Amino acid sequence: MTNHAALCAQIEAIARDAGEAILAIYNTEFEVRRKDDASPVTEADEAAEAVILAGLAKVSPDIPVIAEESAAAGHIPDVSGGRFWLVDPLDGTKEFINRNGEFTVNIALIEHGVPVLGVVYAPAIGRMFCGSDAGATTSTRAADGSFPAAAPIAARPAPQDGLTVVASRSHKDYKTEEFLKGFDVRELKSAGSSLKLCLIAAAEADMYPRLGRTMEWDIAAGHAVLRAAGGSVTTVDGAPFLYGKPGFENPFFVAWGKR
Image (cartoon, rainbow, N blue to C red):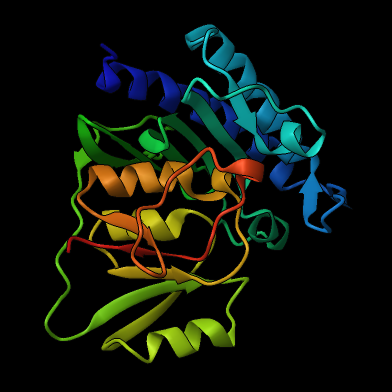
């Protein structure tokens, strides 16, 4: 039986190393290229993915890895066994390019469609999240670069005075605005990358609707954190949200706090 608490610690270490590789490039004059789907990619994406793949090969050499940049290059291993890693080495590349700090390293373990463990690390702001069957935690990097003991987090029930909704900083659209008309929204926050899912897990927000294109690696780690904190992710119609789909493309979804 997997010791998820111990595994979380190992994956957090890998995420920190990937974050250091990203920050080494963050304040340089890096080049921005376009992939076949027109999405941006930088050398930081590739450097972080190399660090993560090497780390996972040591921690779990028998578990296949679906990683964004490798997948874009056509390197997609067989995951029909139901257990695999999903990696987005730098989620929020647009936030990275704009240098607003809201980008993350994402590593998730999927078992039979369910994200059972996930680590999300925002290196520019030094915030780490982990979620597994051992619970959900967060910690923030100290001034000396160390990480204090992680504190437990839990999603909250919807407040009676209205929801705090997080929306994508780079992908807002009218479909989201129309969807939100059916809810009592007290506050609307903008945030980048998978941090939106983690803010719900940490009881700093209540809902995140995404009515646009995303890939499984974009949200799997954040979903694992939110799931461990007592929240959930469903399709817009309320169906369970699973991973390992053909093409790894997501349907529209909503992330919720404790319901």
